[in-house]
Image 1 (cartoon, rainbow, N blue to C red):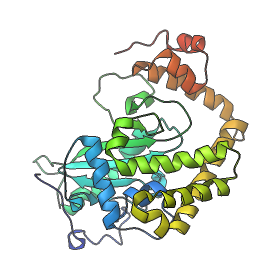
Image 2: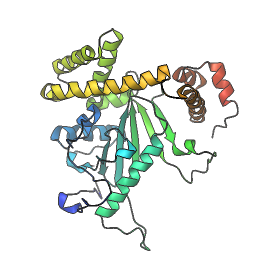
Image 3: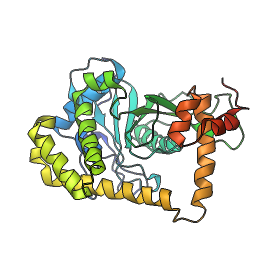
Length: 318
């Protein structure tokens, strides 16, 4: 391993009186973490181990030192509204992992905004000068979105910033990407087989969904899933030790998802129905450009195959 980026508190400059966001290496108590971050994004020995396993599984690497992954998650960038992501540095690579239960085509833009803050802090910590006549070297970015929502997406989908440009631009001169990885049961099974922590996380979330389908209330669904996870000893007893916190996190996440579903189904916001239809059309064109089949697009976006064909008839696949 070469050029692994390490940091101690003494290396981080005092910016308490500045307006820039602060990189927090440890768990921040001001708000409740989401479960994905509680598992993969904390500065505990267990979380370091699981984070390393996830990184190795995604990259086909074999790192053995959990401390090689240095957390640099931004905890207080409110305007970006990233949902308690996991960000870390390793071997000249800046990684951002985000879990989403609702599909969001704006992830590349949000990632770009987030990474700009990370790079700003990195340059400040390294005391680099972007006005210098010498090029400032920065870690390579990698943005992964783990999706476990109800829509049927392919195993992997590349989301591109250029899809949001008002005028089409295929030059690639100004591009930013987010790779969406579907971690629902039946998807990316090889990845989940070699990464037990990810498999355990997916199994627990799926258990809650299955319980809801059986007619259980949100609390009953979460209670049963937590008890099951404890019995199965998922995450080496983590669920037993953190039972009350996990119950609270899971119920909070479910409430947030329910609100989004209510907005989607009932059209409570002004013009939401028109907005949904427009997004479906844009998503259909984007999926087709990325090689997704007509049939899968129709299933994912709840459209007829004929309508999808009409939408993408003039799309040029590059």
